[in-house]
Length: 360
Image (cartoon, rainbow, N blue to C red; front, side, top):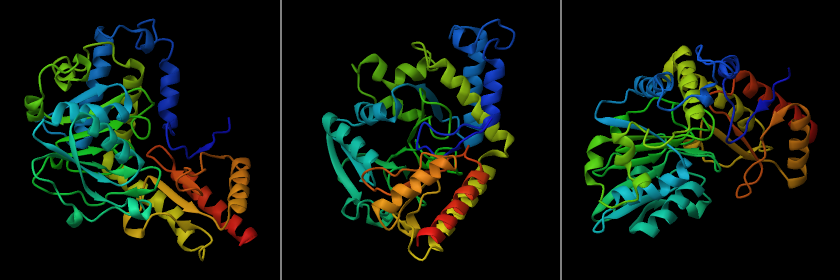
């Protein structure tokens, strides 16, 4: 079997050993005579899967007991609405830092709920950098400060988080579990699973417990964080297979040596591709400024659209998948999430060097 070099931005690569285990258990999960997809979400067998996923995430990210972990649906896009609905009171202002398309969408949804303020932005430079934490200007009566920790489209990432007198909320969909963070620096973290945590279908929300006390009454039941907190994310049928896959991915992360080991490997993976860019004498031009470069999404352009098309066509023949850049940046993008092996990044860097020699 020939496995592709999968650089898709999401849904993205999953660990091969996780796929093999899911395949082995697909028809008969733990001698139940059923697939995990067929189990009742009220069964003791599924309950063990559900709680194991929570416990592993808590262990790997060092999440204190003062936080709750929720498994929701709707992706990060639904969280763009749920965050202000739950946490933006009438007399407060939601503060947002704009660093790309997803933070723009989060702001757009918040505006439908209440008052907002752009605390910092790099839009004027087509999001080539992350604003300095010193340039963030909070409004009066700030309810929270919302950031997007990694920007898949533009290839930028926060390397220092704001430490301001306001609750910090982060969309970590594309870099959760890729590096060590201090969870206590955040009031709420949310992440769609389909980059580093598992397949699409489940969204993880890590929420500080005291935030639940400020949620307004009369929210729609399914859009109220308290509904899911008090029911252990089992108020309605959860995405059971996606949570099962999440638990397998978390076990894999633990087997790799935990988040610290994953972070070290991610830096090595990114470095081999960035080196190919930096050593190309301008043939490959990075979109992101050096201090804001993402370790998850490497974005770069080539000298012309014609050469870019040739690069992508030849890359496809070599087994590289998902390298086309987003239309707002153009060029190419290599998404190198946790499950993308170092060997794939090394092979891409080598291909980039060979292609440059041919067309420079």
